[in-house]
Amino acid sequence: MILGNGNLVFVQVRKARRIRGTREEIEREFRDPIKGLRSFPSSDLILKELWTYSRYGIWRFFRIEDAGIVEICQDGTPLKNSFIEVARTVRAVYPRKMGSALVKVK
Image (cartoon, rainbow, N blue to C red; front, side, top):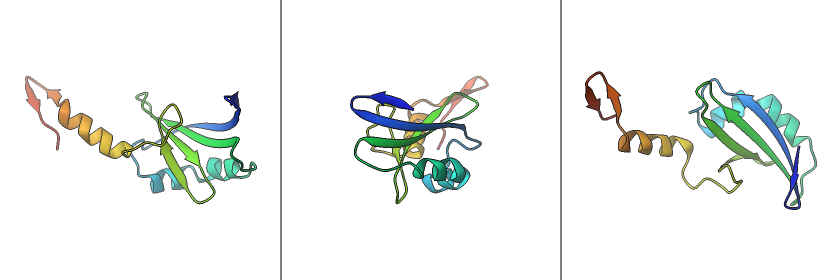
């Protein structure tokens, strides 16, 4: 539970098996924690969030709403591009080094 800026935020932190999954896959994998968060009352001052992380230290954040989940940034604002689109862009801009040659990931 986090209290700040006039909001009360209920947070569940979970390790994800597939951090790059779609929102639907995340919602399916974490159905029980999401169900638990949805059991708290809803209001403009009460927020419910799911924070997921991978074994490599990659984090994703989701706001839990009655109708579904919304991916958010670390500061709580809605993410403009999905994580998957951002990850593809980063891999294209910063190609991985494999052996002695750079390989551009598509």
